[in-house]
Length: 290
Image 1 (cartoon, rainbow, N blue to C red):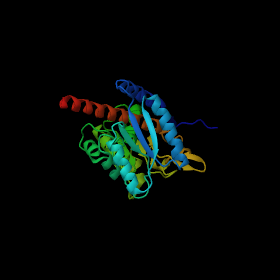
Image 2 (image 1 turned 180 degrees about the horizontal axis):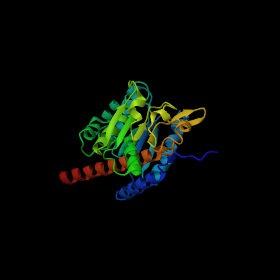
Image 3 (image 1 turned 120 degrees about the vertical axis):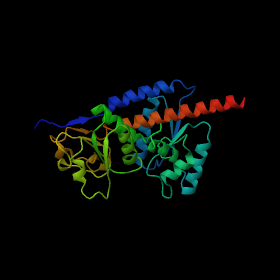
Image 4 (image 1 turned 135 degrees about the vertical axis):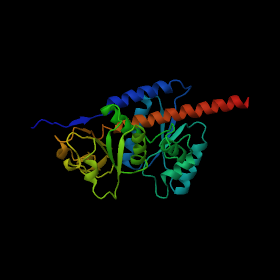
């Protein structure tokens, strides 16, 4: 067998460092941060994912609780309203896709910016967009941290992002611009994807199309962060055709152990920071009242 020349990046060590920092922050609270995750647990994949998340959250000092979506859109809206008002819940996350009739931004609006750890509330997204301290979507932040782990400073780096979603592509473009990278944001209507990606030092792909990125999409030695995780009969696959880019790309992130563990760690960090901010605000309100 020929020697593999393209290295695989795994984010397990980076995630462990972030989780250690989160656990230290959480230790300063009287009780662990509480996050409620809404999910469709009739979906076997979603149920398994939630169970893994809850177990890992405990290692980061977080009390993560799982609940089923209530049913109809109106019932789910009422459920989110109740979570927003609950004094014993610091944060909430909604596992996508949401049930029919529910939209992520509408759900975030109902939840409020304080408990939104997905970065979708307009106040949180707006702060990120104008360069203020913000709570970015976890996957976007994970991509930034992975890029910094690989390259160090990102100033002047040419980056192509494949996918312009509100939870990965768009917020990641903002984070990278703030790091002084040069960013090209590609999407479904991009007419010649390879013309944009093959001049980039770093390609971040989140299209959810297995095998989309081949050697013709990359310049020799390029780094690829593959954010997509698609279930196929052959197992979980990302957007990168690993066989095609082997020996051509310099480094490709592993699916799912590349960006995935760092995304989870960034979500946990958002939960801890939401709990800290919320409890400080409550303490300040109590002091003001007295």
